[in-house]
Amino acid sequence: MSQYTPTTGTILQIEWQDASPSQAGCGIKLTLQTMDQGIVNIHVDGSTYVLDNHALKAGEQITCFYSLLAPALLVYPPLYHAVAIVPGYNGIYAALDTFTRLSFSGQLTNSDDTLRLNVSDNTKKTLPNGQPFGGILSGKMLLVIYSATTRSIPAQTSPDLIVVFCRS
Image (cartoon, rainbow, N blue to C red; front, side):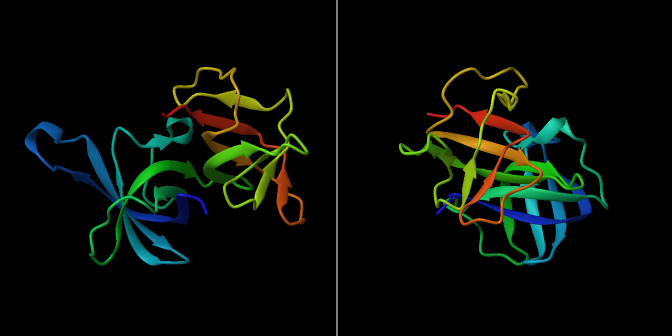
């Protein structure tokens, strides 16, 4: 099972978060209306990756990924810390997970084997700072952006973009 789970919703409100004087203006809280959880709050700070450095605005749809293993306050509505945010571009889907190479096919698969990647030379691979990535994808946390999948189990896709997080 993936450590990261998505929630998709429409931004209702954006508020500055001032946890301490030294952090004033360094974080925001998004209030989202989601289909699966209702109202949720998402904390966004300098460590949150936002696809294309997109400026978030009230009224737009986004997908936020947060860690299931991170501590969470027992408050309502729930408050999650976003690891990555993908704006709701039409027809674009995203997955955030650690992908490993299957020995029999050479494809990359996510941690619960529900998505397999057909990576080609045309697949754009970057680091979070936008620089190209030229290493091995297997075993790394990847943000995969794609537009279509097969209807097979597991689903297969040829990603449009892979953002590689080289965390140790």
